[in-house]
Image (cartoon, rainbow, N blue to C red; front, side):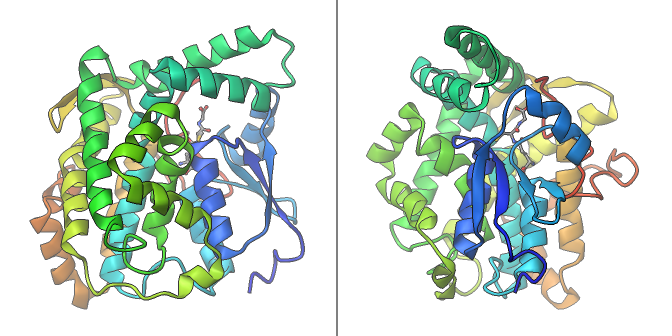
Length: 369
Ligand SMILES: N[C@@H](CCC(=O)N[C@@H](CS)C(=O)NCC(=O)O)C(=O)O
């Protein structure tokens, strides 16, 4: 197992409060892959990241042979090939496809509400700006209060107000999160992980928004304690996993409570992805769209998320023929099917993101460092 990489410890460069760094850590711990977390320094590492992996984002992973990697989705795929024992995807191909859907939703849709709860409220912004100023801006010779102010402004301009959450959208975004908490609570009050007695890629995906945001930042943590204690336990249960945890049984098929998650995803994320495709096609850097009753005003467009949609389509196209009709029926019932194919040819650049995980063509959202 892991023939080419098991002689040394991997270097994971990121932050101890970052969404995607936390997702990667949950994966490494579950698989029993040793790693060392190092703080990524800003702004001194920006250029180095661009040279190594094409863009600057966290986390990046250094292999003992000197290669550098990025993008948690692509890295997990790569590590699953390198460490084939105890796979994190189910044997059932329909469940596997649903895991890919849920991972993508967790990565791309729940990012914005997670950033909202961290940076919109003073409690979150005070905690996160202090932590990040000390952790990743230590090499910058500026007073602490200036670093904190710079961070707060950057994150609000980049990811909350500057990514479509105007005042009028706040209540809708928070209601969306409350709906997710209640759906997950219904699941985790019945079983240990999303698909049964062992974690899958879908649990790893949801560790992104939950482990380092909803279950860490003051306001959503308080909400979880009071409205979704079983979900809070799941966050820690997943973190406390090891390869032995990958032995339990999974349920058969797709349970009704997972259908409910897919319906939720179909209401908000897929219409948003389609509006984003349209914006990229028209060369717009921001766009305004109403999805699931919430108006996002001048949200940032994302080339990366056009690729996410194309990946979901390719994943569907590689599902074996004999299970496709059943999967298509599930996607139709949950409102996903039409939205998945609504846009014709996607506006991707040539061979976009084809060198992942060793090179990325686009950041998820282009925000200047
Ligand atoms: N798709 C990427 C997204 C990584 C990402 O966007 N990470 C955030 C921090 S958790 C970041 O570095 N953003 C870049 C920035 O803020 O400049 C992944 O899965 O790793």
